[in-house]
Image: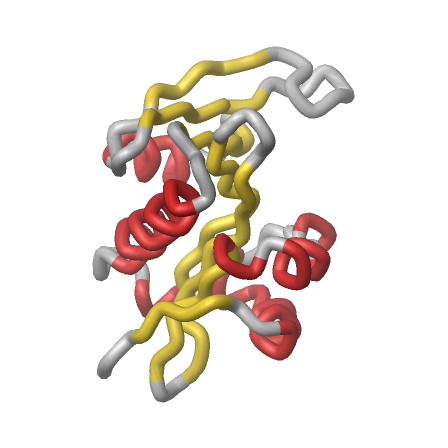
Amino acid sequence: MEIRLAPARVADFHQVLADHPRYWGDRDLRPMHLITLVQEFGPTCLVARAGDGIRGYVFGFVTPDGTGYVHLIATRDDSRGTGLGRRLYAAFAEAAAGQGARRLKAITAVENTRSIAFHRGLGFAAEFVDDYDGNGRTMAVFHRDLPL
């Protein structure tokens, strides 16, 4: 089945939320899904479409200092291990570079060992930062220079 990457639309955002468990399992990350990202940062919010729906997505933006920040990236449960996550990251990196990004950044919870392994597999350096997003919570912070 052909999978095509394209900028996310508002309808895609709502579909991702409707299918949330297919991407995140039991973890409820719906509050982190901000429709504003799709509306304001369209070129760096991408979905992977197939005939049976959205197989994956990446929502991010470029900061004023030239950092392409990946806010969320996910693949549907039936698309894991296919290289789709890498493909989404590569497309995000290209879009971010087109907007002047020189590096990429992402964060995840230190308990999310799959995400940590995925990012390290893409060549990201990981740093564990105490109180990164408040409440004393340690987060894994990933950095990588472009190109990906």
